[in-house]
Image 1 (tube, rainbow, N blue to C red):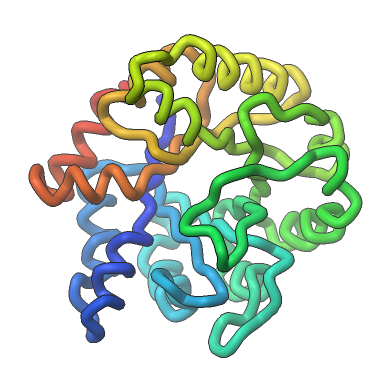
Image 2: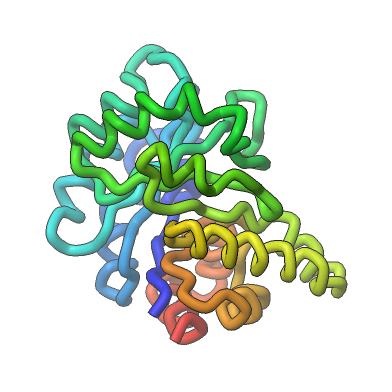
Length: 247
């Protein structure tokens, strides 16, 4: 079964908009775990717009030995204030997986992946450090990406396909081209020896089609849509609905 990793960034966004500790990100994580999810994802950024370093540490203490912990982020973003940098956080909490994403402060959300050919040299020492820490390493890539042999050579174990364009096409009722692009990308990555994750703008409507189309899909990371749906259906119930789709 494809693992569902619930991204808790939006819980932190709501909390930060008011101050204090409500809604409680730790309670949200436990609720998702008790509903059956297989992992929790966070994406700390230097500007601390949502998940903060202390959240990363707190969640590590809750999740260890229970479910997978996936931390996303830009490994080249410099430390700033209380944010020590992605590698430093990984060294502290030793997550199951670190997903490297080429985002910046100017992006509202992640909107493109790495170029596995051009970015290989600067990624190499980052991947090596994370592997030494015992973390599985995944790279965020666009549907249609090439150069998966370079990722394997770096020591990367997975790629996460950016599914934003697929989700947009699905909403427009013209799915075929973007779905086939995701499927072909997954097939080529798997042939190179990489496991395949997927994430971005996935929801209850479009997830099933993607899941069926990509045999062996290892993991989906879902946050924004899941939290939006949970406003109406409840968090635990929404997690269970996603798990049913993945089954």
